[in-house]
Image (cartoon, rainbow, N blue to C red; front, side):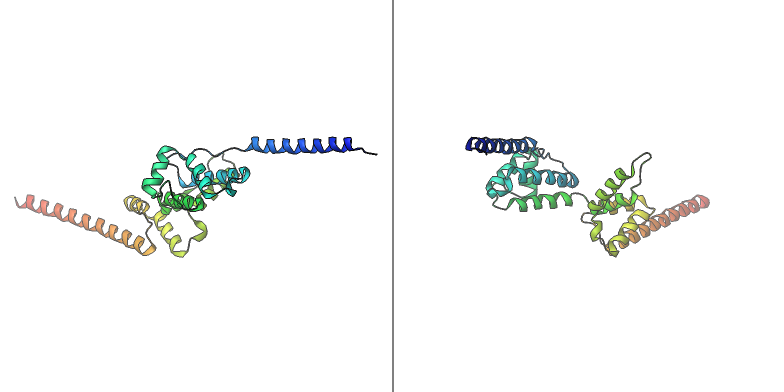
Length: 219
């Protein structure tokens, strides 16, 4: 027969175990790194995963928006905070929801790199010598995500194949530098116009050579 003292001891033991488990959870919480200026979109997406885990474990996501924003600002370096305020246009006293602030930052970072470059890198990706297949697959899927492969239509594929397949490196560099990315029609027109310009320059150079030769012969 169990007496009250035994039950109390059992309850105390259960409480201690629960408190210990809670403390272990708290110890295991790893805060996200401070966001430095110059972060790229892929790194920011990984940072978001760390932030979401941190907010969920610590209960931050259940706190008022003002608390979430204050905590978020504390994980931004001074230079990155200046970029948020002056380049992205989000004041530090914004009343926007934190999710909206993060979405604006994500969109800004995504616009800093042309999707044409991401698609070009994806098409050129090859497994390195000695590289494990899974490591190659991870990199390939990261590139596919950057390239927005899931939403690429016929026109986007044709534009990408043009960029990858043309011989003129100057035209390719011009296409890769366009922000926002050119649509298919504009991509085709740029290639045609550059090719025509090269032909015209060649014709002019030949004409000058012939004219100079004729002049020298006449002399």
